[in-house]
Each structure stands twice: as structure tokens, then as C-alpha cells.
Image (tube, rainbow, N blue to C red; front, side):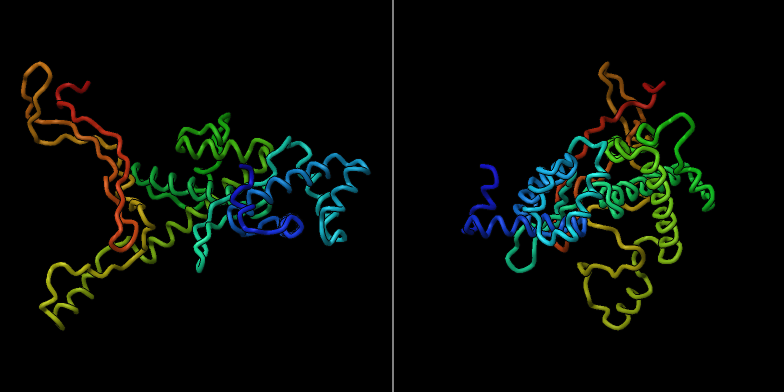
Length: 310
């Protein structure tokens, strides 16, 4: 079953080998390529083997790598640089990111990249997650901090590594741990700097455009020009647009809050409490695109009587 999807393309073995050699050569030259998922998986396997030959460094290994790669004048120096970069890493030199579907034949695309490259996609996305979570944390604390304080806030705490910082979500901490495992303090510093930069961009975009809200001025103008539009028309929006399924910063900051609501609730002992404690959760249905909705998995939170709390 290995590479079965790639072998179904009715290519001859020589064509397939030349295609993979070309992909691996381009990956070493540019450190990132965009191709289909099947090709990315096969090219990743071959790239791992070629980099291992480069790390081995014997004349036989280098001769085998040179016979596989194209444009050896440029590829072999790049292979030597990769062998030096991954000298302490036992394996796992490539990473695959899914990238939607290709326009036309709708083939699934993927980004195949070498790890620890100067424009690492995983490091960039982890820094963005750190910035969003810090923004939500500041909104919960209702704090407005300066740019200098933002850099200090995202820096690692004394005696606490960045990958063990409880201020970030467990998935974010797991991704940080993967990035700093072989790169150490250099990756921690780069993550903190990029996260602070993205947090500044979030704050600046909100100050300039404002949050995603109804454009009341435009709506009033439309009602004056054509008052019989009806109530089913989607109101025009203005401000910073949210991604599909994304919560606004105000909504995300309220998730997990506990508030006392004046609604009776019957306890297990049969008593009736006049108020209950309700935990704010994410909405159960999110809008993916125009007319397309999806159900979000929400952990059920049971309301408890207010007097039962300590």
C-alpha cells in the first residue's frame, strides 16, 4: 500500500523516478515546494534518505547521493549544508502541511518543507497562536499594555521554559516543545519575537479597522433608498473580518466565565435554588461560508446551584 495513490497515475518507473529526483532536488534548493499530497509523501521519503546519506559523509554515500540528485553543482553544497544543520537530529528532516485542493482538477495539495528553515511554517503558525492566546488573556484581564510590555509579556518567565508556560494552551505548548527540541534557546527567542510582532499587528488592525460589526450607516442609507427590502437580507459589515469558525476576541475572552443567572434549578436533594451558575461556552454552530454551517464539538457544562459553590 506504500505510495499506492502515487503509483495509480500510470507512469512508467523511469518517469516516476525522474519526477521524484526532480522534486527532491528542488526541495534541497528552495527548502519548500508545493505539490500534491501523494507526491509530497513519496518525495519526503526520498529526501530523508538523501539527507541521511549526506550526514553519513563517506565517499560511497556521497556518490550515491550525487547519482540521485540533478544539478549536482548546486545540489551537493546544499546537501552538505543540510547535513550540518541536522547533525544533532536523528531523523524527521521534512514536514508536510495540507494546503486545500488545486483549482481545476481538485487534487489535494500540500506544502513539503525542510524543518528548521529560515521561513518555517510551523514556527510562524505557532507564533500566531501565541499572539492570539496572549490577546485573549489580556482581554480577560482587561489590560491595555504598551509595546514594550508586550515584548516582556511574551518573553519566557524566569526558570520556566516557554514550552511549559501555563499561559498557553496545551496544543500550543506541544508545538513549542517540538520546535525547541533541537534548536534550543534560538527557537524560543525567535518565537517570542514573532509572537510579539503578530500581537502588535492584531492590536494595530483593531485600532484602525475596529471589530467586525454591522455597518449601520450603510444599512440606513440602503433602507432610505429601498425601504421594502425585507428582514431576511444580511446586513452589511465593516471592520476586521473573522476567519471561518473564528470567534471574536470579546467572545473568546468570555469562554469559560461563570455567571450567576436568575433561573430556578432543582438540586439532587429535591430543593429548588432560585439562581444557578452558568459557564459560558463556544457556540455550537459556526458559519464556514455563505450558506454552509458546521456543528462545533462543545463539552457539555452542567449548570450548578449558586449556593452549592464554595
